[in-house]
Image (cartoon, rainbow, N blue to C red; front, side, top):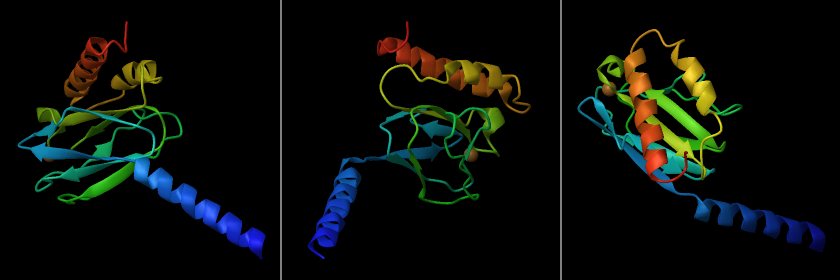
Length: 151
Ligand SMILES: [Cu+2]
């Protein structure tokens, strides 16, 4: 009985401390842009989408880390939230405004994202708004370079 209580308390304590460390990052839909364009997070952090009137958000296939969970919000889903556990870069879009540049990036973890090569390859599979996806990846790489995380 004592042992069970001890482990229950331990599990609860660990759960709480993990939650307390995790941060929530807000991404806003502003006209036809995501603000910020690139969001930086730690594994276990969540991102929350605000100002979603007229927008949706969906991760782009092949442009999230291996084994990471895809996401897709409903149109206008205010406060849609997703927790990102895997390190790497996540590229996402707003479907109605993808071709006008509403493509964003989230970088999870420190250093260079491990899936940059996969992103470059997957750009070729994008049919609509390919140039805008490429532009966001380019801007993300430029920011990472400025921060000294990429050669
Ligand atoms: Cu939009």
